[in-house]
Each structure stands twice: as C-alpha cells, then as structure tokens.
Length: 216
Figure (cartoon, rainbow, N blue to C red):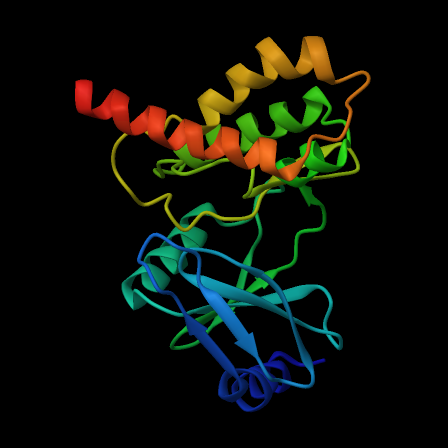
C-alpha cells in the first residue's frame, strides 16, 4: 500500500468518524470511534491510537487536544531518528502522526496478567533512554504503561514528553521496585496481581510524589 493511499484512508475514513474528548486535563482522552474500517487500540493523555487492517505495521496517533504537543512529538521523533528501542515517525498531518507499530504488552499489563518481565527488558529500556540523552533529549514520563516487551526485548512506545526539562523519577522508581521487590520475590513464580491492587499502588505513588514535591 502506498503512503498516499494510506493518508487518504486516514483523512476520509478515520478522522471524520472519531471524537476525542476529556472531562479533565489530567484524565486520558476518551475515544468515540464510529469508523467501520479503523480499530481503536489505545488512548493516552493527549491522543487516541488507531489501526487499519490493510496496514498492520503502522498506527495512527490522533491528537484530541494541545496541538503544540503534536509539534513537539514530531521534533522528538526527528531527533531520535532510527533506534531499535523506539517507534519511527513515518508521516504526519495537521492533528495526527503515522508511526511504526511496536508489538508487545505493557509492563503494567504483564504484572496484572502474571507474565514474567525478564531483566533484559529493563536493560533494553535503559539503553534506549541513554541513546535519547545522547541525541539531546530528556527522557520524561517513562513508566509501566508506556513501556512494552516482546520476545524478551523492551520498547518505549511514548516519547511525547522527551522535550521537557527537569528530572522525572518514574523510570528510576520503577527500576528500584523491580530490583528490590519484583526480581527477588515475584519474577520466578509471578502470580497475577489484581488490577485494583496495582491501580491502588499507582494512585498511592502519585500522592507520595506530590507530598515529596511539597516538602522540597
């Protein structure tokens, strides 16, 4: 399939049939998809992600708010260039990106389902983040919901905040939990962990980080 034809599918069969809304600026985008040919496969703080069966190697990320963030993400992908840990920017339009599809399951979902996370995945992510720093980016907001693993390898699926300044502790905190809790106690047997427990840990972590910032 030519990219010109794929772009026409996006603009004629996807964009007119989706609505992206959010009731709160910190809540994920809610996607309403009435397209007959495009499947919704994800949603985040700024955008929804869609797949067309005729081109399973690509996904389309459509921004529902903050158009400036789209421009920032384009610049991030251009700086990253080609690296095995990240997706690749293929094309873009006024409010969407066409990206190479990364296969895998998020670390968050792997914990819920009891799927072991090998140490090689953590090391792959570390190498990817070090590469991003080497090309002048600042890895930011890297956590268990935007890191995936596939066949023992780790990949980062969301780089939209890599342009931001400052230090984000999320990945370092996740690694610390992996090394001190997950690897010695959960990795070998790894029972499924119910969603409500993991979600409670996630929300508690947010409160903890806010309290730390206030004290600082």
